[in-house]
Amino acid sequence: MITNFGSICIDNVYQVPYFVNPGESLPCLDYQVHPGGKGLNQSLAIAFAGGQVRHAGKIGEDGVWLKTLMDNAGIDTRLTRIAASPTGHANIQVTPDGENAIVLFGGANRTVTENDVREVLSSSAAGDFLLIQNEISSLPTLIELAAVHGQRIVFNAAPITAEVNRYPLDKIELFIVNEVEGAAISGEEEPEMILNRMLEKFPNSGIVLTLGAEGAIYQDSAQRISQPASPVTPVDTTGAGDTFIGYFLAGYSRGDDIDQCLKLGCDAAALSVTRQGAATSIPRLAEL
Image (cartoon, rainbow, N blue to C red; front, side, top):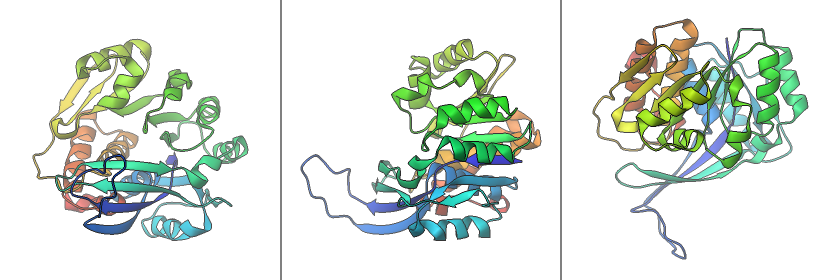
């Protein structure tokens, strides 16, 4: 079982000719509202990949439709709570070449307390997987207590902040990071050096470094495995990383070989970038 204690957001997506400049008012070409949040996206990807996942997190009254969406996807939402705060949301600019720029409002995601953490962990068994991102509050407490409970912690360090390096990262079983996040944790810039330095800092952890159009690399103390990405023409890259993570972790939690997990994640992510949106772009397993 995978417990994803993660963010749930409403994505406001603006199609723009280019990213808006300071002081500029830029008319958009189109506008859509999508379900989002790294947590929700990753839970959907796990479920679509055939994994068993329950989602712990918080929404406002304006986000009840997101809980219904997860229910309909086969995600266990009994640990998803309704808070007094509005649901977190993102304002996303997407350019014609598929690049994106995102402004986040944490909302209910930032109201997670130690009591919420203890409630979720009390219903988890030792050896269960715990997936986390960096979009909810009380993360250091969650990591510490999850380790005490014997959880196998998977950390997607996104969005990266200065506080991440002060988290108890030695408790993480598996890091999944892109080059920007890996550089912030390792202090290195090149992919090979990022992996080497992270392994020096966390010798008991596995590291997945995602490289966008270049694929992904897995590294632990015993092996390094590379997987190229499938060549596609991107329409919208929003949510590609979340798709990769969900598919990779679905395989990883089943005990699949790492090379199989990497290929599954890369293939799913490649298909996702040919579609608009984040959660709405995640493919089903049968589509691969």
